[in-house]
Image 1 (cartoon, rainbow over the protein chains, first blue to last red):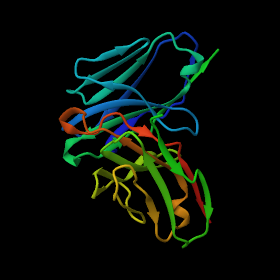
Image 2: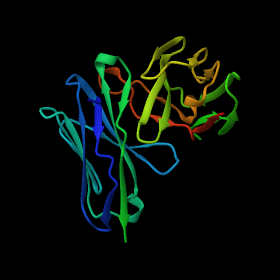
Image 3: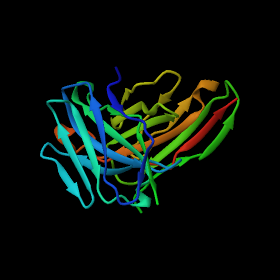
Image 4: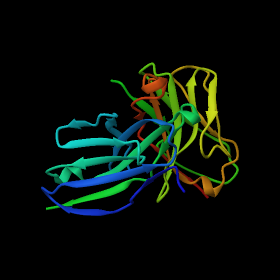
Length: 111
Length: 117
């Protein structure tokens, strides 16, 4: 089993819809969690950090479920510009400062 | 402008010819890292460094070397490249101010597309 797993998609979603991704992690000692966005052939960029209490930034909401060992990303009122690959990242303190990346979920927003 | 630079951006080389990809950051970040990205596999960490003269292996260190003699630079060295090292490479840096002292937001360079024939 991979340490960090994501549904690869692609998710084809009409503009304006709400879409949610999950990312599961295997190491219960994991401490830090992040969502990154990557456009085709470009470098990843931080979208959100994920806190225990959950956090929201405009149309984006991130949540952490430690009991079930997954993090989620919700995008409301999706825009064409949201089309990208979304990567989840986990920092497991067992591995000191090594970051474990999911393979990414591809999202395509259609007009 | 705060940034991470990588050079070269594109490189085509032959098996066995030693090469170095440079990475430099101007944000005084402690943590630097090299990744490779292959279709379907996502980002895999090659090596990382928490500070000058401190480096550790990531998931896929075989065939690579790194050094961290200065805080701003973290070159990636392929002593004898092979075709299975054909990939898209990213360098990244961050502060070590995340939870429990771990790396926080990663700032990435633009990537180096390497082809080994």
